Every structure is written in structure tokens, then in C-alpha cells.
Image (cartoon, rainbow, N blue to C red):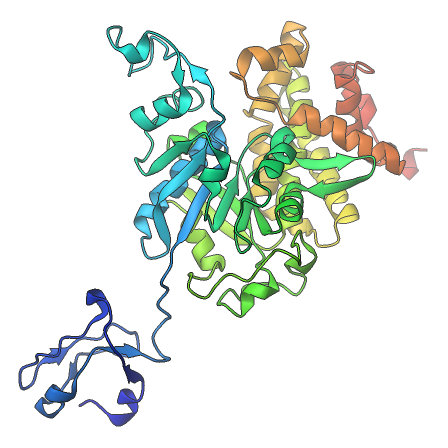
Length: 469
């Protein structure tokens, strides 16, 4: 029977939406099934309550009902940006209670001639007689025919050439573009982003100069006045797009000002010192579902794309950036034909230097992020086996051509991250007087700058122990 203490958990109110309305026309012993976990069996509602029943809701035992959903914008549309947009668009359709289904994807507008080997090519079609705007091709064909050809995209992805319009009213911004452009992109978005938006950076790089070293998640947060986490892992874009199983790591440590609105998953050293602008950033309104680890995972996790959530934003960001430098070294030794042993040696030294760099220059960085997570050791293995930095460095040695020439020929307009990161990291280390403390990073820079040859790598990274002296 319906007990009085159970009734105390219900409050009367006036009209609810039809989906949440309880029927007031009950038979003498009608059965009302309530779906809250508290109730394990149907509740008998006696005839005596029939005339007094009005629409009901939980006052404190039911999970909160949120009147708004999160709008997602993906900033970037290269092969990795488009792949992440695909993952997200699949999830917004699956989790309609949390996210608006439409996913805006900002596309740098350019004209593209549909190639004859495309499945969409029709010689008699006007679409194929001359170059077309890339956004029109993506929206019309539901495929990024230039940067992710052959992969069907969910129809709820909307390619938008206007970055301000793409980001309008978005509560979650996912940044996925070459790190060289992030400063200009943030300038274009300044004052165009709502103050309670939150970001995730998928950018494989780190903003370093002789003046200092800054994570792109921090840089985005500082320039836009929002909190920004990071995503990185052993994720070759084409394999993810083909839905081949893999893992990734998402670092998200919600700011304290979100805690009172249902996002309590934060560490003691959380985002207070991150890139939050105190003059602009606001708490996520209670009308929205909380952006805790559970809901962030629902945005990215797929059966083929498994997500692990951590709070070490610095470690995840650095793992994604520095492994590109190591991958260039691995490509160099593989191009020389030195085999897997040489690549393994490069990777071992590379992981050590990643940990040293992270823990020395970022107080919140955790060694375990590099040694246990996909963004660390797993991404190192993948990038040193088949990533673009590895492949271009290998071809550079085998063909005896500058890596920049290989990049232009092979990457269809996209950019290597490892070369620019190597120069930037060296500029920072040189200003710190610490080049010798990071022999592999320094060796890659010197080879790219023409000061050394790939054949010199064993000598350049060898560290003499005290017992050998």
C-alpha cells in the first residue's frame, strides 16, 4: 500500500509535460509503476486517492529534471577533427536527454574538386564539373571528401564555415585543429562564446617559447575565459573513423564553481589555477545536465572508442604533444633500416623525457599518466609505428629529402605537429639552460635544423653513467 512516508516524497504541482504527467483517471485498484530506483515493485493506489490525484513529481528523491540540453560545436574539420565529430554526433543521437542532436562542425572554407575515384563522382553532374565549396560537399554528401574520404558521416553533423555561428550558444566546444592556428582561432572566438561554456582540447601540441610553456587547454581557457580539459590517446584518425577498436584518455577536472550545480568530480588541485578567467567564466547553470565524468564519457565513449577519464590535464596534453617529437626520431632510425630494437630504444628514452618534462615544469603532472594511460605509453607505441610524424620522417631518410617536402607531398594540406613542437620545445629548453637534460628532444631538433644527422642519434642520446666515467 502507498505509505505516508512515500507520499512525502511527492509534491503537487501544475501542469507537467505529457511525458512526465501521471494519469488521474484510475480504476479502483489501478497500478501505477514508478521508475525511480527506490521502488522495486508496482505500487497499489487505492480508489480513495482517485479524486485527489493531480500531476506529480519527485521533490527530492528523483534525479533532477533539466530543462536544457548541451549544444556541441567541434572547432576543426581535418581527418581527426571530422572523426571526433563523427563520434560525438553518434553519441548525441544516443543520449537525447543530455545533448542536442545537431553537432556544428566549423570548417575552414575552401574549394575542392571531387576526384574521379570518389564514389560520389558523376561526370554528368554539375557537382563534378568544377571545384565546390567544401562545406557544401560535406553537407550534401555527408562525407568529408577531402580530409576523411570514404567515411559516411552522421546526418546530424552540420559543416559551418562561420566559426562564430558554429560556436553560438554551444555549451561544449571541442577543439581539434593544428596547434599553429589555435591563437588565431581563439581571437576569432573571443567574446563569441557563452561564459559558462566548457572546452575539450584534442590538439596535439604545447605552446612553448623561451618565455614559458603553456598547455593548449590552458591557452584556450585563458583566451576565452572558460574551463578546458583535454583528450589524447593512441588514436590514428583513419582507424577510429573505420570503427576499429581503440582507447583514448580524457582529462577533465571540473572547476569548483561547477560543483554546486552537480559537477562534483574534481580533485583537490582542480581547475582553479587553470585558464579560468574570473571576469568572464560563470558556473554551469542548473538547467543543464552536470558536466561530470559520467556525462563527459557519454559524449565520447563508443563501442569502438573506449574512454578512460582522468584529472591530469597537464599529463594528457603533454603526452599528446611530446610523443610527436619522439615519433620523428623513431621514423629516422626506421628509415635507416635499424629495425625494431632501435625504435624500442627511442621510445624508452622518449617516455623518460616526457615524464621528466611533465613533472619538472607542471606541478600537477602525474607520472602514471605517461606510464599507464592511452595518452602516454600506448600513444607512444602507435605514433612510433604508423603515425604521420613517423611515416614522414622515415620517408625523409629513405628518400634523402627534407621532411617539409615530404609533408607537403603526403599530407594533403595538413601539417606535421612533431616538427614545430621540436623547435618550440628546444627554444624553451635552451632558455632554461636544460638542453642536455633532454638529449632525445635536443637531438631531434638538431637533426631538423641541419646540425646533426639521423645516424648520430645513438651518440646524441647516450648518457654516460657515473660508473662509466
